[in-house]
Image 1 (cartoon, rainbow, N blue to C red):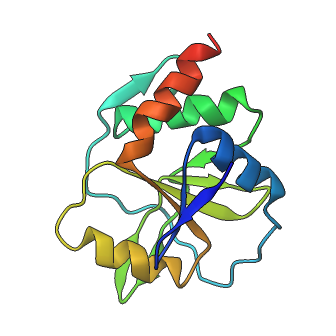
Image 2: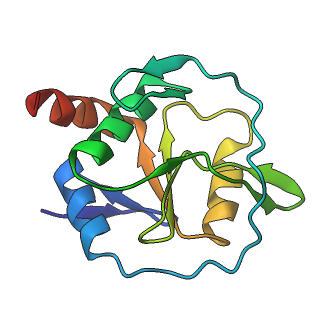
Length: 142
């Protein structure tokens, strides 16, 4: 199993590669200030399994994947400031103090903001090509 490397983020070939990476990841200590979450997009998806709202089905299946693999997480628990604007990552894994962004669509300026955020906090990017893989991993265990 392997991870692909881009200039800004480590990219994973599969959910199992991601899981191995998270399990092996050293706990970090974030020095950035954390704020109450600031978001501009409405929740769209309720999930009965995790009993929470999410903004996309990608996030729903990723949350289920974390739950099925015994990884405690918080959904959008706080924001950080990136060049004076708030950035709210999708997930936070408290045990590792790492953030995760499930990226389906890139809105205007989103890529630059995400890259800048990754310089401030430990941030894992899960691009849209993994959405089908996480969905399949969840469905295969049910």
